[in-house]
Image 1 (cartoon, rainbow, N blue to C red):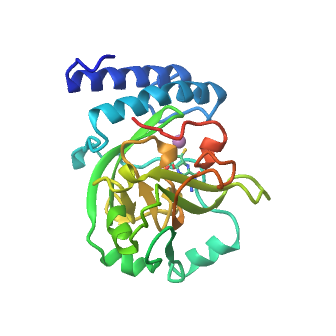
Image 2: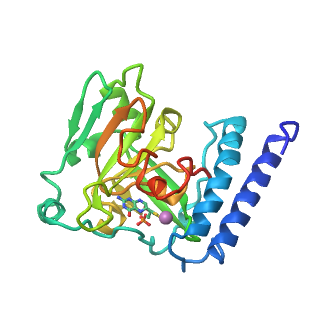
Image 3: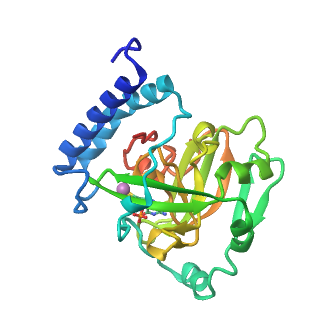
Length: 263
Ligand SMILES: Nc1nc2c(c(=O)[nH]1)N[C@H]1C(S)=C(S)[C@@H](COP(=O)(O)O)O[C@H]1N2
Ligand SMILES: [Mo]
């Protein structure tokens, strides 16, 4: 791949390459809804793809928009994957009273730490977008997401100059009894301020279902499924990722997935 090639051609090549690799690893078609589990082959493929992937995203511009679809393209049911309801009393109690006690905290390297109720988030200016979610297990689904842009909330919190990453802390634990295994994710400020990066409160015109991350999940549309954290209750601005859990910037990254899961 050379920089002399026109933009659209580079893009097409990159998509083809990545898709071929993912399909090969998953042993199936990306369009299907039957997937495999996260496995070693996929991890290896993602690691190899990451360097190329990041380079190309830099070259073609990180502000490029993910494709948006028509309402007619929306899948009748948006498939759920990973945690479909966080275990334990905390989430059960939040769910029982319609998330009235739930809060979204924004803290870390910010001038003005914030705390929002669900009602406050619902009153913010919102964006609606129909996009395709691609999971590394080999399936994709098109859905309509609605919610405030992450940039709006960040502007209220005012990240300090040393803030470089945004970390999303989730309410679900991935392994029984392991304190380090809460789901978490992170993105850089380029993706954080991107037009399509949302704090999604709605899916297909309804409040976010529990299986898709109620009451709030993040959409980072130019990245793969595991970079779309569900059950987010805290957004932390940090200068580096090394101090979090295993230090690779996310639950699946700590198991070997690429930190930059661009598509
Ligand atoms: N908190 C949390 N976020 C998560 C996961 C999870 O298990 N827990 N799974 C990830 C993966 S691998 C995928 S493909 C998508 C699935 O989102 P969905 O359930 O809305 O389809 O969520 C991602 N975000
Ligand atoms: Mo996934």
